[in-house]
Image 1 (cartoon, rainbow, N blue to C red):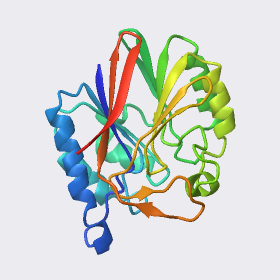
Image 2 (cartoon, rainbow, N blue to C red):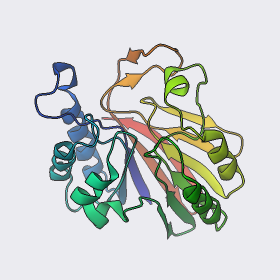
Image 3 (spheres, rainbow, N blue to C red):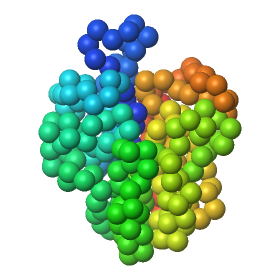
Length: 238
């Protein structure tokens, strides 16, 4: 199975500041790459909007996603789940709670919703239950690890209950976790699971400085290829 992941699109409103003029073009480049790369599934893992909950940004994305491209859309902390559901519906959001799982070949694929900057108790229970069933991959907006404890994102915008979520993952059959939120890329051994953080096409944040510091970047798409229980992942810059 070939999965593509993009995240933290932060699509601006029309007439947004000039320093965000590049964002829509970068997102279009990502989508064009995915559409041309025989994708089985595109996962857009949250923060679709620059202006929180913007319906016009979501509508723009809908108009730029090919109907033939199978896509799962997840909410991030800058999205309004109700707006996503209204615009994209069950075809791309699956259900209104935005947490669910499906099986394909030897693996289970689990999706959860951290819109509130934490994973609610009912979803912790869901994660524990689903993750116990069989070897699994997890998609989540926030990293269940600080990545760099002295960095701006870890200090200011972590998943509030990241330690609890990480322990649930370690006790499960989840081998790999795919996320965004930190506006940079990283692949980290978290002592029981592998964490894969995917960068944003809007701006990139230095993970190692306490002050908010941006870095030069190119838009990237994370490739996730599975065959049986084998997994390969990398970021392709487009």
